[in-house]
Length: 238
Ligand code: SF4
Ligand code: SF4
Image (cartoon, rainbow, N blue to C red; front, side, top):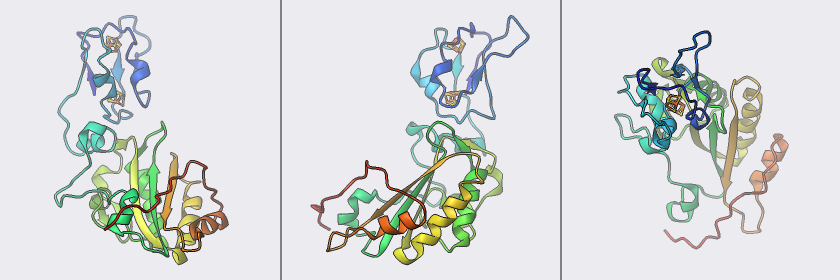
């Protein structure tokens, strides 16, 4: 995003609308106009969409690669990154009764890197992916992030986008209950090394006896479930 200096009146009205605090007034010049920190801006479009600028000074320039990737991981109106192969996220877990993607003994894991309110770079996302690949995680083969990996087996993301900033990136994979503990331990370790935040979502089928094996495994790895979990009551049919 950019600000037209000819139009800006430095009123700062747009500042609270920036999701990552990227809009600023340069110091030391009493005639300075507001600017967007181009490194920090994740191209979410919020400042522009809000329509708060009294002089229409905020504008979206055409983005070139690799910056072009930013809105796909920040702007809800940009949709998902599709890539050449038509990448798309896995079906939502709440549709599992219909898709049957996750069977008993399996856990679907989704990690959201960068949110709330911090953002991240693909370099930080890569740290998480490398740590997971080390313990044998197989990333969702058709997913947007996987399509941006040089080698999905190693978790290495393509070099040219590593320093691009984004608001949040989802890492999707499924894992057997036997291997879930190792994945969670790897996540706990890498959480100390990333310069951002991430949350971990786990979904599994409740056993016939009402047991939820994932909870015990997560507990052993040092994770506790938040109370606002979702339960799908199983009314869907394939
Ligand atoms: S596009 Fe988003 S991140 Fe960039 S300046 Fe506007 S609100 Fe801030
Ligand atoms: S709202 Fe518009 S005029 Fe005011 S500081 Fe932001 S860009 Fe400049």
